[in-house]
Image (cartoon, rainbow, N blue to C red; front, side, top):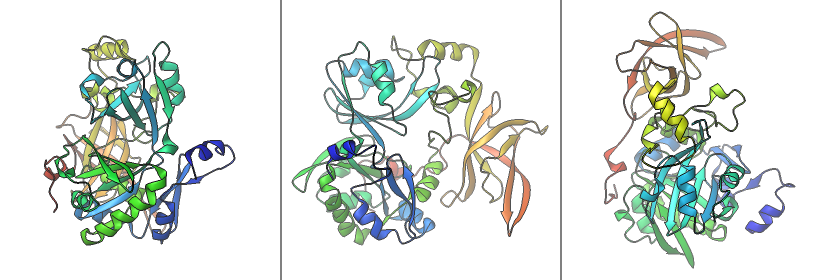
Length: 400
């Protein structure tokens, strides 16, 4: 189906199938799906644990077509993005990608995402939430064109230690030279394949972008070459484990987008999400700058931390207590980490809690054979990612 047909039928079709669906539906023996924006996406294909193992030991493919994408072009594209986003977009040169956040006037995060500076003056902003209304309102006075091209661009994440070898096998000559957050273009099936060294797993990996007509050909090429490299499809369950191990946050899970929060105190600033490095006060103007300067002076309300929790019971939605058994925060994401061999979590704590020496406890409830139990588990603040292999940044990338 052509992209224009998707737009035309948008209000008559409840859920679309991605252009990769002819292949993902064949592989999904569990028949487990969920709706991600307009599309149906696999939660798991055959076994969540084995799909996760492919990410860390071979390579795995995730259909990320539903990710919201906006193409931003025009004479004022750079000026507009620099006004919108907290970091200095001028430092993201053509052929590079930058992780970023954007805020409302109160300095609270609306969303996080990635800016692809594909060619001079040609940007793509990828995000979890739809942002067309916010972008359009924010563009008043700028000479820019903003188009949501989610339906026009297909994407898959190819993640894991053998991912580079697979890409070389399908004809991406020199892809091993791409450094983290770099972009490369390669001829494929009579068109062009864009490859970015990016991902959501904290491992060596890439994201591949192509037009819908060549989507199935790309999937087939990956799995043909990847058969010798342990390639597997992966669903959202396996991806969730890997992103928590990497310490990555997710909208609607680890923070509430400011433009959707009914109670404004539920929103978070970049400083409160451990993203202060993405705020560049050397820029003269950007959304939320004044509020963030004030917060820097008076201090933040919350601190996002990564916790290593004793035991093996995931602390999902757990309260966090201090030594006096006073509630000081809540867990936002939690999993047992197969790679770190630890019970891990992301948590939002009230200031000043969350320092390395703080005594913290998680109140965990779990059910076994219809019986609920409660444990109080000691927590240790972890300064960085739970899992961060050297191959994630090594350039050139190895084949493994």
